[in-house]
View (cartoon, rainbow, N blue to C red):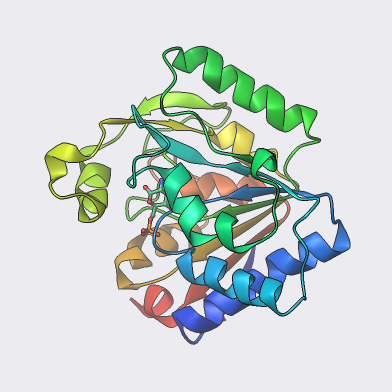
Length: 240
Ligand code: GLP
């Protein structure tokens, strides 16, 4: 694991955007794995700036997002599909049909999940997977106790995650209790991984990641088993 400590969230965001742009410039028809949450917002803003400056072209890129609440309609402003449209897709020239977010409105989640993994495989697999991290060390919605080989699946959210994500809803009762998430197995199949960690509230999760233990109670530690992971963290997350 390669760890880079950035002075600030702004610096972390610029560095992450540069790395993603480099991936796209090296392989214009690459497959990006994308993430939601507040952490990648700065990265998406910095990527938009690079696009507007003519430094990166997304016209041949395909993307797959990590997760979506369930049940959740894509038009709902709380959905991860809506988030991606607002924060990135509508600002750049990625083809709408090349962007994928798990379907939170499906009435057959298990078929939807199996199909998502098949689609990623048929697209040639993910070249670069962008990740954030939950305070409890979750990745996507792979909560503590996750299994290493899990593929895309429907999962209940923990009380901790519901509480942490309640800030985006008017009340904790409105946070969906489930999500469709790529599994740790699907994530670890990506050829390279870029994990963003920002803020004091992520210090404990980062410390576990920096320890030498792989612990299913902190699913982020599974990333230590991957040969090509870069962790970009800011001072606040590192120092605590
Ligand atoms: C959600 C998402 C994760 C994300 C996490 C942290 O639960 N499913 O993919 O990493 O939140 O979000 P934030 O960056 O807002 O702290």
